[in-house]
Image (cartoon, rainbow, N blue to C red):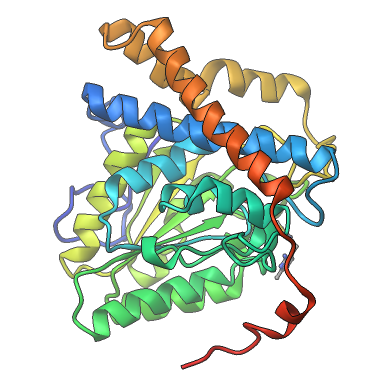
Length: 353
Ligand SMILES: Cc1ncc(C[n+]2csc(CCOP(=O)(O)OP(=O)(O)O)c2C)c(N)n1
């Protein structure tokens, strides 16, 4: 499932002329996790999944209005990247942003309260599902305009580079956004100035209802999209949290060594519709079922924990129960918290310096 245009670990990129295939045997067997890493991955992915399931329920009950894009199925991508990133590294993404917000350290209560439009929400109830930030955790949103976060993420990397700070940026975007002009303008500047930015393409195969082959040339090789700029790329099994963490770690070393940007194409899948209003009739039930049964990122971790004897079924259930409690408390808080008063409409319109 994985290929690369760099072929090298960390170090200097070999460029993209004559793209090299990565050692696929190795790519299919990413470095094993230790017990603590497996348990962290399990907890983090369960937190994201249970949070999203609860958000979906609250939407159905009418507690959440407007847009709601869920991350269910894609948990390994954000989780693996956050396991690799250092505290000071920046992260920015699209409207499908609850996972990154939680993993950056935002309080689940405040995240859920943002979804229900309440004052203690992370954006004071004024941003909603698509516009959440966690500055203390170096998470810069949450952007509703497709692709807008790519130049912004490039700018974050420019700031780090310009100020001589030891910081890189992970800029996430979908495979649909990968066809946009602003993405290539960003690639050009990032490559020209050798900016420490890791472009994470979350290839979940559908941009709203459009299957990737209907919209993208060379749909099987999105990791090659930086070729004209000399940006190396790698295709990663985005359903395997170990593969994601490994690739993100190597990509981080690459950009921090001053080699300029790199692209990681995460091959992933979303189980639910694009947003809550999408009945997802453009694909078969069997297709979704096949991914759930054969590739689910959480089931993979559970299986490995059990096989290694690092956890029992009861231990795993206990982690799930603890996460469910956190999420249930977040939901209770979010439906009862105070609504923003009318004067909040006029606050935060312009930045104050
Ligand atoms: C500039 C712009 N064009 C169109 C839209 C409407 N729109 C919202 S999401 C989306 C599809 C994006 O798909 P992709 O980048 O693959 O991300 P995914 O939703 O799969 O995570 C579109 C066309 C928008 N929000 N912004």
